[in-house]
Length: 144
Image: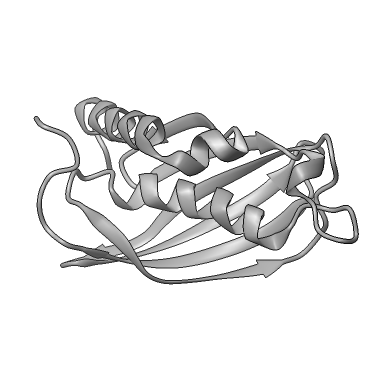
């Protein structure tokens, strides 16, 4: 169970990563919250993010989920990277919809973490489910 100091540090890490990542600016990602082992971010689907069927491109949704995953797996202030990740698309996200990715740590042992990221639309539809495996590399994300 996280304490308020751990959650505050995790939020500071997510804010730092959010401010330094190019993809957050490209897709207009908004940090909705973060704590030890979890993070949440959102975006509004724009026409420039769509595929040929005029729904949100899978790569854009993957990027949204990957950001939430990154913030969650770096929340202990040990630099972590994705070792592997996969996504299952369930429903389309349409132009103008706000979609939110909520990453949750499922397990963390040694240098390995397992995370599930659920992407939902404002009406509660599940858009996609992403699963990621992280690996720590050592070093701090932010100075303590």
